[in-house]
Length: 216
Ligand code: AMP
Image (cartoon, rainbow, N blue to C red):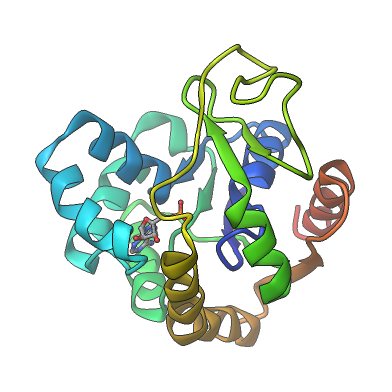
């Protein structure tokens, strides 16, 4: 299955992507994760992307689209993939069509995680990520047993640079202006399925898998 996950920052895309990708046996391809890995390694791409990420703005298309084109051409994506965080705009969606057409394939479905703005702010401000296994935690809603340490792998937890109040507000504005039209775009194509992304993580995963069955 070739699947895109959309939803506002903090909707739980990263969390759900991990579980749904395992269920579907496809690689999870997160543009945010790839950018953060490049920032961490100090690559030229990372240095460029960091300026935009720290402000909560989108990284320019010429950088992002090239990166996705290269990633989708890798062997593990040949039989399917779950894209998390791309496309984020209608022009990126049109580029994705081109990339997939060049690879002789097309997208099957777009899964939207629906969450309101207040919930998103609560989630993002308490979010912590494991440096080791990338498992996502929340200081109140899903705390690890030992503060700052991942239960799953013992790795150190960190707070993303862009999870601060000012950047969160800008990311929500960017979502409303640039990504919400993308949701309408896929709805018009009959490719969109939306699920309520509030409540326990396992329940949301179950809803996601149920919703995808109809496209399977
Ligand atoms: P995420 O981890 O999906 O929340 O992405 C973190 C940041 O990476 C975003 O706020 C953007 O600065 C950048 N980013 C991720 N995906 C994209 C994309 N498809 N287009 C442009 N910028 C992106």
